[in-house]
Length: 588
Image (tube, rainbow, N blue to C red):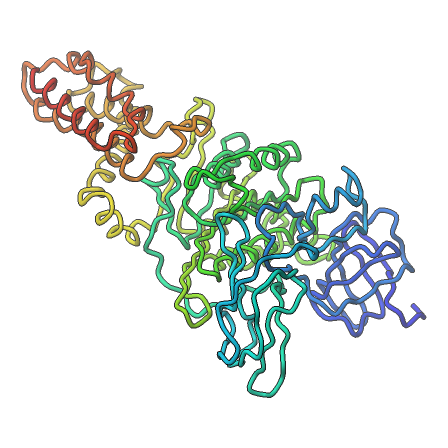
């Protein structure tokens, strides 16, 4: 190209190649074509730059201009993030709809935060104080549930506060003036920017020791996740990944939720977007959206924005973690994110790795999940926060040997394997108790003993053992029938069936059954196991008739054990039921 201005020389789907880009930098945001579409430089070669464009490129051709911005792709952080639904590059969907109607037009831009809304700012420091990065300048009541902490941006160290005052301000107004040791003055606003591909700075990472309470019995009891942990939910289509993640978003005890719909079907995402604003947070009784940010990037949206949406979401999540909150991020699904990487990599003509995925799939996956963690926040006031990441994986045909699943399992410590067989049997959540695992149980061992019961782990391990023994016995039953089994083996099958049907089966659409506290989970399981222990005492008697056990009236009551309201009646109904088990079995 003879022109010295950056111009397009090639267009290949979302990938645009531009010439005369000598002054551009890696990951710089550029404006492409006459319409000024948002793009990001992802490769530089002499004066040629490869740009991934976050909008549809149909109709753009060689010769059109490219404008450099000098900025990396960043998110705007500040009050107003909660209760907002964004696209993959932090454009509020509501504003985009107002500007272009139901079908998004190209080149439409929107600020991540509302620049006109005024917030009540309450200072926490005064003129003359010394502040550094991460210190709290003041607070804003963002929603009734979340107090937004306005922090000193990263990079400002040992600065003296020259002026600060309370009042109503927009995110663009100067709320404080500070001067650093080198004599430079800085005007601080309520907003700050952060490049999405860089993890936010923390003082230190710490060992997570508190469980993320989800209310899901199969997760909390058997395969727990900690606050600051990383978990994955792989499963074939229709096995309940999205419903499981939505249930976790509704009921887990994280203070802030970031939900990323990455490449999901449009109708599925629409369901989430229409349902969430009407949901009530069970922990506070307030609307769930008051502590939620959503990022919607459906499968028909540009593929490059899908790749960015995961980073946008996790940067927002890290920002709230840095305030000292426990944050949970749901990414549904990381397989679509990996497919976006594969498509961009193919258009860049990079050497493909396994199944066509880029060779850096493993490092990118690890980089994403490594941003989870329990941390000591920046600042002088000893804040502690956590970011828990839960990623859904959609392996084609449920094949867990494919690269995305394998790379995810390598870096996450909790695996909730969804089973197609269980979903066909309408057993939900369809988490397979024989294949799933959690490596976080040693972290929370003390917490559960101190806060639930000293024999919590004995009850849990005994139940898991019975489920494993049942799986072995099912093969024998198929070959020779149930009559060939001993009394002990028949007992194992009876109790394991009760654990499966009365305990593990949970209706996420039933408001009462969808959430079960840790204490109730323990009481329910202990009641089922009391039947096993009491019958086991009689199992070796020669004249013992096992059919009488199956006819005991108390078994019907055990089947309805989930109906006991522990919040209203306490643990007494469970004690009574266990006494009845002892009495009825003893009468045999």
